[in-house]
Image 1 (spheres, rainbow, N blue to C red):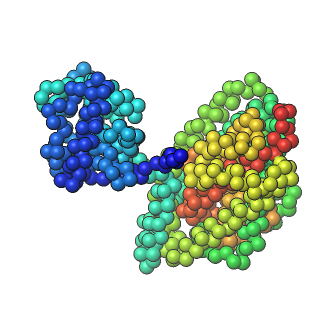
Image 2: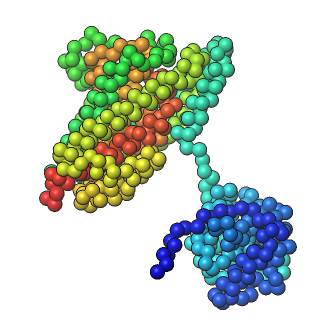
Image 3: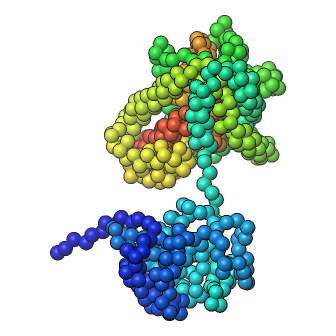
Length: 576
């Protein structure tokens, strides 16, 4: 009995070549006509159409293509640039856009045994052009179905040169934009290049480039207080229903708090132990002189200083620990008074959205701002700044691995009852997706599938993972601790115990209140730095590799959520 080969053919699209491909193309056209006739469309392609002369005309317009499966031609299509004369006039409708350049797809033909041809052609064409038009015969129901299935909009009727009518369609997609993180990465590279080239032009850099970076930094400082204030309150309000789920909600919250405390502790201890091996770069002499000196405060003095005696002074002076306390009190109060606080709740969530939008405006300037802030740093330190990036990356990922290997492994083994190897192997698909997508929310469906395969019920998995995607950010807590100690060392600042406490508290709260906005983590990093008296200018240095770090942070966060789901399943099972 012979084996059925279910392997998929290797598909490639290339430009057509005559006369080499001529004979095969005639076979393709004949097969396509047979498909049309069998479907009741015998009148679309007649009188030898399409001929090899027409294919040659497509080639001359650089628009004739063939689809090959395992090296054999299975389809043909033309992809031609505008203008298309027959599209100049359209009846009983109008084009989606009649002013922008477009491309036209003509003469799609294939063998019946070749599957997914239309999909392959669409992917190929839209990768090259975002504005495409296509037409087909009224009797060609198969083509109409495929066109509409792939998102084309019916626009009206056009007439060919011989007077025959065709149904006309158009589809426009958004041009792919370079992501903000990619733009910041490019700005990093350009800043290093510009800094090296301008090493002997320090006066020019400080007079004409650095001020623009200062403007961006001022905007970032301006948004930090309202961002922290409203994002933390909104985070507390999002947990309004936790009390309704009894044991599961309380134990989940307790688990997240404990693992976050371990995370931020690790993020502070490891770089502190490695301080003697870390590179030192000059960030800003002026900024270092502005450090908040807290070494003379005792632990109790520091705790007392966290509680404000005035609601306005902490906001105006960027006393971030007191701002956090204010946010906690207001957020918890709004939850406790229930319906009476509904108006305050709506206003808070509305302001949170407004602040988020302002942050988007500011972060749109981030590539330019980072370039203008980093270029003077490179001018002052030279290419050695790249060594600092490598050290920061190594520290962060080392802490990520240690936290996962110790805390998550111990939790799933001791509390969850499954081996760490089984857990990490089962979570591998979600972890890989999280690393590439850089989004814990987008990874949720994968995390749910993986935890279900690990024996977690749907009810527990959905609740724990959804809550964790909002408030559990162990990766953020680790990195904020690492970055704080690292940047303090770069600036030559010897952190005191009270400053370590400030970083730990601020990082824990910030990891819960991290907004889902591009650049939100950078703004909260500025908050943590400010709370410990570390120059906020250091955010510019960290921003250059934030995307690479964030990939690891996301993996940490979704893995922590999954470990919690496994533990809750063992503790509560069906008793939820």
